[in-house]
Length: 176
Image (cartoon, rainbow, N blue to C red; front, side, top):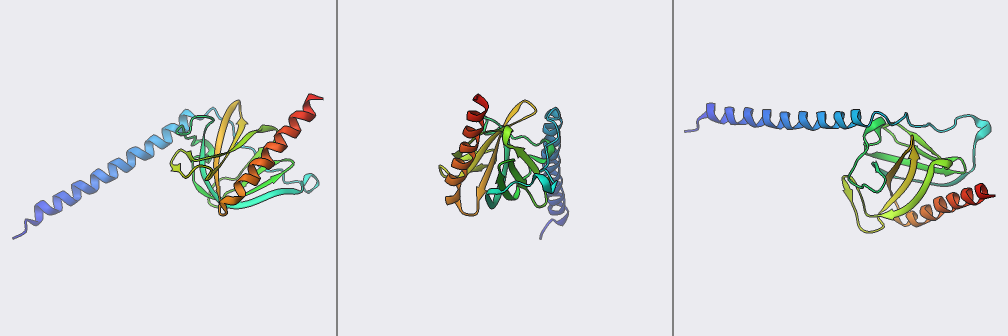
């Protein structure tokens, strides 16, 4: 015969344990966001039609998160930067517009862009070498790496070249 009372007790105990672990993970996420509270609000794309810039590149894909630059495991969760989502990226002369359905959109002004490279990992996502587009940018005095993966990974090289040439052009013009 089956001891139903013991079986039900184990199932309830296991359910409570899973709920406790989930709650602790959620509290840890919220605490990390509190610790990163000194990061200012993210800029939004300019919406005035007079300042509309021609599109240099656009792509759809996946946003895998942001980390402190050079620290691929130090995820930034403040202001929704830790939320993975689908993404529509648009690069213009004004900067990089990051549109994320189901998450907060943000804009990286051209002056904040520092570098674009092909990488293989960011917190929570590891791919083959060159499988991730990593964009380094500055926000509120903090250097941030944001990881994107295009639906067509062959586009990554074109994005790296376009972003880095935009940065080089800006630095060359600024040196004059």
